[in-house]
Image (cartoon, rainbow, N blue to C red; front, top):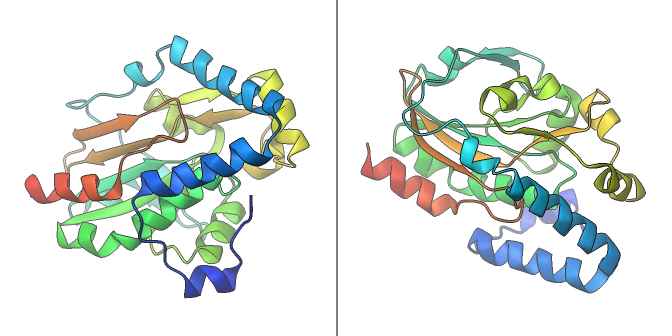
Amino acid sequence: MKWRSLEESISETDIRPLRDIFAERQALIAKYVPAETQAIQARAVAELQRQHRAENILPVGAKVAEFQLQDHEGKSISSSDLLALGRLVLCFVRGRWCPFCVAQMEAMNLILPDIERAGARLAAVSPQTVQQSFFMRDQHKLRFPLLSDAGNNLARQFELAYRVPDEQQAVYQRAFVNLAFVNGDKSWELPIPATYIIDREGNVLYASANEDYAKRPEPEDIVNFLQASH
């Protein structure tokens, strides 16, 4: 799979629906990734689904406990800070090494003005280090905070954290995805990708998670929800 260069990412804006972008990337995976590797990835997703992880996430109506994380510049930001001006769209992603996470963040970046016009803010959370978050934001010209969830502590609060299976770890290592370096720990834990909308009092208004990292909410649907509930 070809990563777009910084120059390309500036000059080209992909305005297709996220599902179309994901379908294109999945087609490339089907064409170029060995069948054995694809089978390992499929087994990992199936095992997460068997455990019903997405069914157990922090649900709509729940109260989010106060949290504090470092952003891409190393500044400490609390949930109170994020909610001070209104509702919060909070996306849990795996990291800058994940092409599906990158595509989602670029798509969310495009609708940021719509989110703000609806009286909300956008932030993303991943277990990667502050430095990796800085690189991701800079490379893809993202205009919202990227928060580093060291040790997946916040993801655990939202019931999203899981340990990457051993055979999938080997796949990532062969692809030079060194999670111990990227995340700054050796836990091999990641969050299930998820999107939340939280009101100013910390109540969950919207919750979407899927064990399949190639299935995520359409940004347009997030905007429609915000506008309808404004």
